[in-house]
Image (cartoon, rainbow, N blue to C red; front, side, top):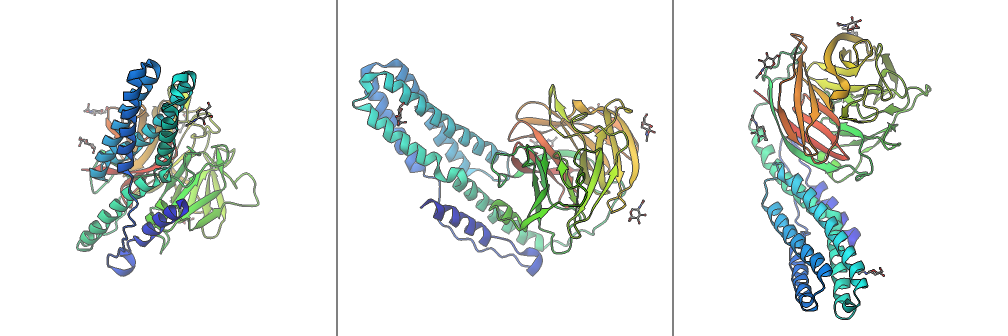
Length: 460
Ligand SMILES: *[C@@H]1O[C@H](CO)[C@@H](O)[C@H](O)[C@H]1NC(C)=O
Ligand SMILES: *[C@@H]1O[C@H](CO)[C@@H](O)[C@H](O)[C@H]1NC(C)=O
Ligand SMILES: *[C@@H]1O[C@H](CO)[C@@H](O)[C@H](O)[C@H]1NC(C)=O
Ligand SMILES: *[C@@H]1O[C@H](CO)[C@@H](O)[C@H](O)[C@H]1NC(C)=O
Ligand SMILES: *[C@@H]1O[C@H](CO)[C@@H](O)[C@H](O)[C@H]1NC(C)=O
């Protein structure tokens, strides 16, 4: 029964790809397979719990009573949140937050049930009438918790989003696309970064929550025919290393975890064939990353599979100058690659610059030479991440487990630094392992404790 449900969700999403580029037409074949979250079941369970409480009130078993009461309120919350989720606008933040809350609620309810069971075993009085009821409730809730492990709710949500994308796509067809210009660093035709909105999309990777460290995105300068492709590098080896790039041919494929294949990074040189840390970017059909165990940037060509590298003079590596929040540092985040309108950049720190951030612009080609370097006064271990947009370097700090703040900017045209920005955005989880801006879609690509998210950069 279960495999059918999962399979159906996948089929549904694949049918719903939007073939805009190829046909200059919007096409979406959407079938409603009717797999919605079982709200009725939730109401039934809650009713059964209310009965339990009534029975217990007579028996005056306070410990169990409190547990059941607590469960009752949990279920009411869950019902409310499910109801709200159904009504929500998918493009807002609330979709993500509600999904997280519902996941947390389901797992907390599960814990309460376990506690209730162990408590009820201590109270012999419960074994008669109540024990079978508790057992029954537990199995019902288990079914609910396991209900495609929230995948149905998520996919339902994604389908609603795809439907909206379809109407956006139809609207876009009527608009003439803007000419593709490459502005010089700092000279943004669309102004300064004013805000960050979203998340606009979010999901866990194909690896679930097993690997909190990784990087992902879309190539800002894609190879012909690969305009809609996504890439993903999860640090599947100890959360530190990886040696392959997973590719997806569309957003629907990414959502449905239908990979277009893995590209293995191999070379005759063992020092450059694996990548370390979550700082990689894809640019012009090549992956740029911190080469394993060296203060170097590697370039892996996706077509020829050749690897080139460049040393960053004096760069800290292997956890010397990582990103941090207070005393907790994000492992192997010393060397961070970035992309923007003017190409490829790298952020690191050196002892010569007192552990402060050094920014270099790189020639994104096989020569991979350093074009220009800026010494900043920004202590690297005091920031949580960075990105570039329009020749401006932005740095973030951890505010709390829900909020991250862009607080710093360095304009590379004027060399002026400022630390008084306050552009805040909401996270799904505490740590932002990866942050990069894509100049093609103006989205920030984020890896947030195994969740992959995008945010819209708002300029003006
Ligand atoms: C309750 O706990 C007992 C032992 O602690 C276990 O055998 C039983 O399967 C549990 N029942 C449920 C419904 O969890
Ligand atoms: C920035 O975006 C957030 C979320 O979309 C919004 O709540 C906030 O008002 C915006 N701030 C500004 C200054 O526009
Ligand atoms: C950055 O600082 C280092 C160390 O003091 C120095 O050698 C280098 O010339 C500086 N670079 C720039 C662009 O100021
Ligand atoms: C960048 O690399 C290309 C290709 O190797 C080379 O032709 C070009 O001169 C380089 N540009 C600069 C500014 O160094
Ligand atoms: C922020 O700092 C910069 C540079 O220190 C300064 O020019 C600017 O006026 C400051 N802005 C605000 C709003 O304080």
